Length: 116
Length: 238
Image (cartoon, chains in turn green, red):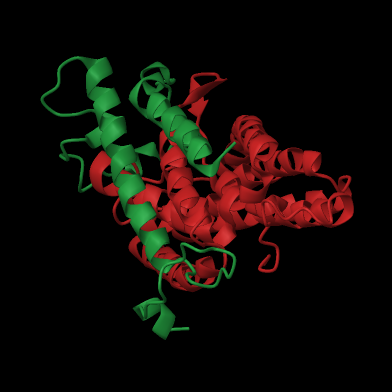
């Protein structure tokens, strides 16, 4: 399987999970929240400063249908993570040290290069 | 496992924030050794997959649920330093946009799931590889074992932080017992997902799996010493 094809499969699975299957996720409290509740420290939790975010709790504000609202929030989140991490990893990767790679980009100096 | 604001006091949150920031600073330099033109796009996809996987809560009984943390998974697939950065980006997006995990608790969450999740998961993975037969088929089970251990390990570290800086006076033993027991069960789910995903990628492209690189190079040397059609990059295994 080519790397491109593998990437397409991983991306597809990711989008289906975040955009579709997340609707069927268990809504029970997670392990930490459950333990906090049963042992008695859940009340010490405070609302996040971002609790009013348009995507808070994986629901898109203004979208009434819960399935669409959650799926949309998931897809936006995936896009944000992909953009941020993809950009970060592409920026800090090693480059130009693959003699067998004819398409290698020319060596450029970056702050990371300088810091090495 | 996402810690909300308020569970831990300010000094503890600052301390874990320092740990997280230091970890990220080191990881930004070390991850370079794990990332090249081929693996960098894969690492971005792994972060996105971890974000999606963390949305899927599975029931673990008695009105409780768990979800993938993905620390061991990311560490085995793209390397522990890159994996830690994957988790950090995921947790940042969750805290900023989804209100999942507190803002003042972001350092705590990166410490628990990014640092402990990735590095405990990866260390146990490597130990398991030493015990298991030296072949590619061992990578997925070893990753599963790493995942299994990483979840209660993160739960234990949370409990230690709670003992030091918890805002509620709760009996330590009760919290530890409950945290570890529930997170062992959640860890089984983590192990299953991690084993399946790592096994799937190893089956099609073992050369793209960071944790399988030594085995891929060994196989290449033993079985097909002259195979040059797909040059394996083996010299930079860290």
